Image (cartoon, rainbow, N blue to C red):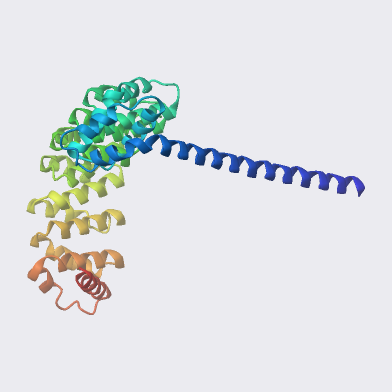
Length: 352
C-alpha cells in the first residue's frame, strides 16, 4: 500500500512538472513571438508610409518605390516579407513596383537559390515568392519543383505556376497529378491550370486519355469549366467507356455545360436504371443544364423514378426549360418530386 501510494504521488509530481514546463514553454514562445513582432514593427515603421503609397497605387513618380529600394540589413528582410504578403492582394502597376523592389533587394535571386535548399520550408516559401513575383524565367525551375519530395513544396510550385500563368507549364502540372508517390493534389492542379488561359485546351484533351483517373477527371472538369468545346469528343468517350465512375460523372457535367443538341441522346442513355445512381443523377442535371427540349420526354418518364432525388432533379430540369418544360409537368403536380422542385424554385426566385 505504501509503495503504491508513493508511486502515485511520484507520478502526480512528474505530470504536474511536465504541465508546468509545457506552460513555461508556451509562454516563452508567445513572448518571443511578441518581441519579434514588436521588433519588426519598429524596423518597418520608417518604411510604412512609402510602402502604403506604392501599394495604394499613389506612387505616380516612383519616388516611394525608390525609397523602399534603399532598405538594408534586417529592415530589408522585414520589408521584403511584408511586400510578399501584399503581393497576394495587390495587382497592376503597384504590384510591378513592389516586385521591382524585391528584385533590387536580391530577394528573387535568393528565392531561386532557396529552391534547392535542404529546408522544406525555405523551398516552399521560395516557390511562393517566385509566383508572387510573376518570375516567368523561373518556370522551368518551378516545373522541376513539381516533383519535390515534399507535398508542401509541390503545392507551392503549382501555386506559383498558376500565378505566372504560362501555358507551357500546363502539361507538367496536369501530369504531376498522376506522378507515383509524389503526386500533386487534384484540386491544387486544377486551380493552377485555371489561370493558364485558352492555351491549355490541347493539354486538357491529351489529359483525358491519361492512364491516371484523377488526371482524366481534372482534364474533363476544366474542359467544362473553361468551355473548351474541342474536347467534346473526348468527353463523350469518357462518359460512355471510362472505368472510373467519378470521371464519367465529371464528363457528364462538362457535356451539360458545353454540349449541343446531339448530346441529348448520350446523356439520356446514361439515365437508365441499369446505370450507377450517381451517374444517372449527374446526367439528369446535365440535361437541365443543356436545356434542349428534345430531352423533355425522357425527363418526364423520370418523374416517377424509384429514387426520389433523381425524380426531383428531373422536375427541376423541366422547370428550367421554359414553357415547353413547364407544360410537360401538367398532370404531375401531385407528385412529391414536382412539388419539391416547384417549392425550391420559388424560394430561389424569392431570394434572388
